Amino acid sequence: MRKVRGGGEAGTLTNTTYSSRYFTDEVPEHAIPAGSMPARAAYQLIHDELNLDGNPALNLASFVTTWMEPEAQQLATETLNRNFVDQDEYPQTEEIHHRVVSMMGRLFNAPTDGEPVGTATIGSSEAIMLGLLAHRWSWRKRRGDDSAKPNVVFGADVHTCWEKFARYFDVEQRVIPLTPDRHIVGPEEIKDHIDENTIAVGAILGTTFTGQVDEIAAIDELLRQVKQEKGWDIPIHVDGASGGFIAPFSYPELEWDFRLEQVRSINVSNHKFGLVYPGMGTVVFRDFDVVPEELVFKINYLGGEMANYSLNFSRASNAVLLQYYNFLRLGREGYERIVGNLMANAGELERTLTASGRFELLNDARYLPVVVVRPAGKEGLDVFELSERLRERGWIVPAYTLPPNAESVAVLRMVVKENFSRDMAEMLSEDVERALAKMDGKPSPQAQAAGAKQRRIC
Ligand SMILES: *Cc1c(COP(=O)(O)O)cnc(C)c1O
Image (tube, rainbow, N blue to C red; front, side, top):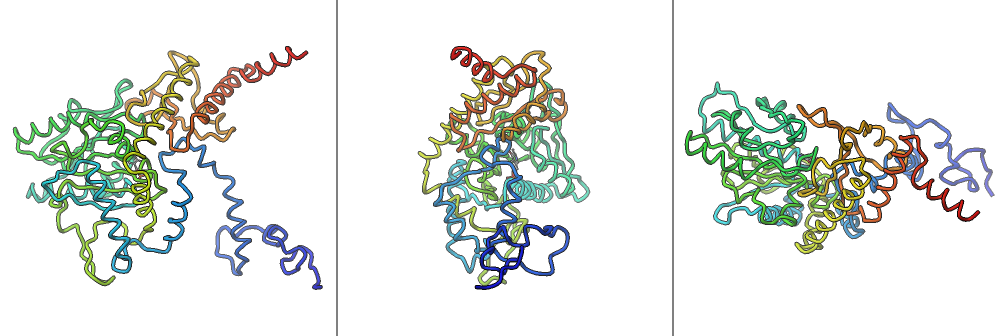
């Protein structure tokens, strides 16, 4: 038998993960440690530290997928070591990428007489940058005036990545403010902001703030009219980050996509309601000539000649493969069923929350399974405190104020995802009641019920 050293990791008897010295030493935080440590200890240290994170299953703040089937997990793990950009080395991955983009194009009703193109991206942010960059270049070519300054027009209901594009790529942003009563934009607001230097109008299919939808078909009509009258051919880029996988299944008749003439590009976050883990998005262009050839890089140093239109070079390929997995696994039928469940559970959550009389709906969750409520009537309910109280139970439900000029409206938002069951909707509603009772300084309904039961027993 070997000697056991106190607290050391070499002894046989105390050679468990937690008995090793790494669990009494400080964890390296600033500089790479000089020495190494056993794999088991490194794993356990990081694993344990992450217990301080929120629980993804209770994260109603994010639109991004937090659950996939074990087979998807297995596929993702198996393909972790494939760099997506190595198309020559992994031709079948590239073939699957083409299939995914092609399916997305058809989902968005790309015209059959054109040649739609697209690419997988890290998410909608990259997809929006690529879409708007293409429009900026096309505008410059059309305009033929190097001194003209480009602008992009959208409502204040956009995601920050639109403002990022404007700032990073030096395009004037013309942001249409919201009002306390209207949280989307339509042709009435757009028409005074566009001119011959407008590279594109942004329209949102499901805003981040309220889940509502900009008046896309009416904006298209306005821009067609402007094209006829003034000769300005202003494209629409539709931000379908969250709605792009909902509308085709819940409202197939809603016209928001390539069925509208001025819609030249669409982005979607596959890692939202495409139901795959992050990071996966797609940008699809109506026709290949929407993307100026100068932006497509032909590279030959990976073997073969490949066309590349992206901001990143290397990236993981597994999220692309996961999207293909979901297309095969679920089919349209599966997506329809899941989207139906999401909408039904969002509706149930709305009903229970509003039945308490403490909240009113900011939107009805008609287009997205997103429940957005504000305090009812003149009630001075503090949604920020309620959000904190819910966090004590593990629920992550953000509270925030709307963008300008609707900052006076403070809301709570709950994104209903695939793993949010009816049961969880009920538990959340009960926890909201309990939290409200605490905030009111009253015993919770649950405590009152328990008290009543106790009295009966006595
Ligand atoms: C989430 C979201 C984005 C950003 O998408 P990422 O995939 O996270 O980059 C952009 N626009 C809208 C409307 C969104 O909901």
